[in-house]
Image (cartoon, rainbow, N blue to C red; front, side):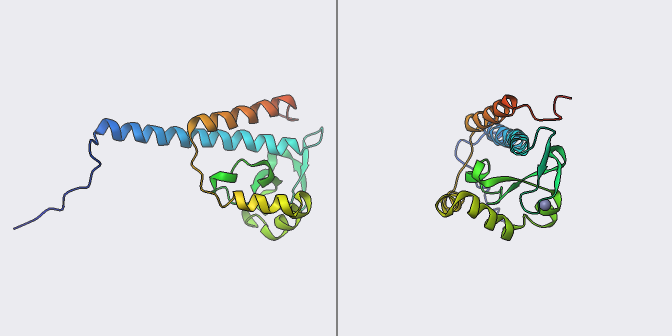
Length: 158
Ligand SMILES: [Zn+2]
C-alpha cells in the first residue's frame, strides 16, 4: 500500500494567511530597498564637497558622488549594522565590488577614525541578530531623506 507523507502545515494555515505573511515579507524587503537607496545617497553626499565630488575611503580615488557607492564595513547582510553611520563609508566600485570592500584598508582607517573603543563597539553590534520591521524601516528612510534634504546633494537638484 502506498503511503503519503502528510504535508506539514501550521495549524490554521489558510491561503489567505499565507498570502498575508508573504505580503508582510514583501513590504519589509521593499522598505529595505528604499532605505538602501536613501541611506546610500545620504552617506555619499555627506562626505562630498560643494561640487559633489567625494573620495573613496579605501583608495582615495575622487569622483562625483553619483558614480560612487556606499560601502559597508560589516557586511550589509547583517541587519544590525546595515544602516549604522559608523559602518558606512563612500567607496568606488573598484574597491567595493571588485576589491570585495578592501577590508584590510577599511579596518585600519576605520579603527583610526573611530578609535578602538568605538570600532570594537561597531564589531560587537555587527554580531547582533536583528530583524527589521516596517515602522522601523520607515523611520530610517525618513531620517535619511530629511538629512539629505537639509544639505541638498550637489548634482541632485540640477
Ligand atoms: Zn576605491
